[in-house]
Image (cartoon, rainbow, N blue to C red):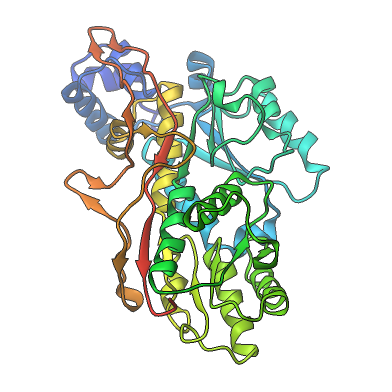
Length: 404
């Protein structure tokens, strides 16, 4: 019978790397305060020896699980049919994986799921939480607070006093500014009767986009005849468009608060014999890949959803004090915040078909937003000082295709 070789120990890794056991422990546990050259030397020794950390022992030492909960306040069918969620999860997953953090996905299929999720968050199973697609009456924020888990939200929080919480972190798009760009473009094209299909108005992304629509038209409230409520789905957009054609048959343009709703609107317009854009111009929001495949290709407002997911994870890693990956370092180094009114506006760009521009690039990678910079801490002999983190508002940019 062959006796298996003993597993490499921390001491063996330390001897191989020529450093102390404590240094190896800090590197393995993702702690700060280790110079890059030393960290690389230890990581090479770990790879050479095939050292595998004991997760149970590491949790006892670090009091961390190495896992983060991603909580989406939507049912399974919606999450797995909407490309928005796939892109955001991809950005989150890549960032967490780069820092050796496990993603645990929790969905809200039914109100009875909330107690289960609350117990899980409070049970010490994860080190932090990322939450998005929240609705105004959602109990998830209070669950996060009661669990005392570090949390980053996707989307501007809409609950009372959220704007006055200095610890609140979120990542959002300039929804109001993006919607304003879309409607201003329609006005510049000579459109006179511009309707709007909103998302659920218990979500701040939908209300901010409706506010941007009103800003462009110079009105405090939308004309009820030109407004229909959707639900961020293609079916909801189709129903809303049919409703608008009944209430305002002379409309000559529509701004839909998501690409899925815009594709549903295109379907309803075709069924009614309306030509796009000759009779009715259509603009969506999100710039998901299918927007360029629509017939005709959809004019839309671009937001970098995958990058927003990456930034959410990078912010949470920073709050947890986890040594970030190179990607997290880059994202957190560019983190900034803006007022919730959405002051930033990107320039419109013309795009044709699937080769449409997918996001502004800068010398440092994708554009990250504008506004006040956060303090990112500074290196000291004891590692990085506590950082001052702030919410992130990413830019919106109109992408012009054939539908408007």
